[in-house]
Length: 343
Image (cartoon, rainbow, N blue to C red; front, side, top):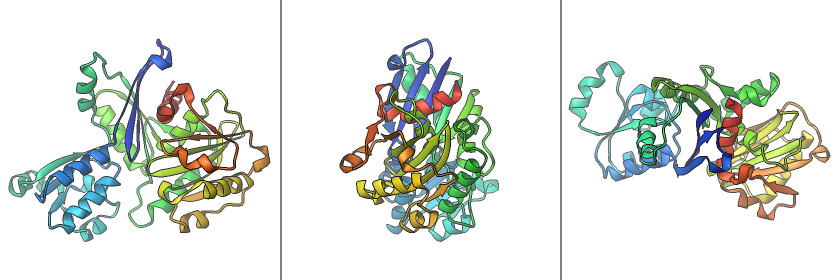
């Protein structure tokens, strides 16, 4: 079986061409700039020219900040309704940002009149990736597995609140790691849906996950992992920590990486396992939130697995952390989680 696994974060997109006929260490891999980082660079390179955003919803982050700066500096930005959801789920808020939303029915006419720099949005560009891999004789396989951070479609509420409502729902249903992987994601996961549609349109078979559960599952493939475990993924944009027992996520919290340090993570991790951390504390600190379905007690934790490109934040930790390097590569933790969810 061959699988293209792509873990899309804020800073990088990590890519694994998995082939079960090879040792996993010999499977081809790449770490490339994230789509939002690349598109933000194109916005900055427009040098004040008008910009038209088309395509599908994708991760905002760097791109959203670049669009806001472009408008502040006097540039004009147009967007189709689907692409606008990259900036915000509420189109009225997008308009308040100064972005002009073009109704799809009139898009063809507006292409001629706007004369703008056109940016095609989307977390995936399989055609472009195919051109790159073709140089080395690598073909895109039939199965494509992708991880994106999906807050859930929430036009009338905080997407941080919505994200944890969805996590709460998943944990109440059992929190099984398998249940975080979708071939057809629920409608509220519009970013996952967009990625899955892109894959299907290429004639391939999709599997999509949120980046958090993908990283958690991948870290647990480290040969030293023992459950009950705490898995911490410190990414470029976000940090997630989860207690996993019997292949089930039973509690988790998520924060912005820029707002955490080793002391805070030590405190939050212990209290997460003990059941003494709540949503409001993390949310009011600028994080996404916390949900505890079951508390197992920190003294019962057998391993604390640490992964992610910013794991060095924990170098001053007083906890007995294990640097998770599944199959010898910490940067592909999410990809390994995707593959494990596919096979």
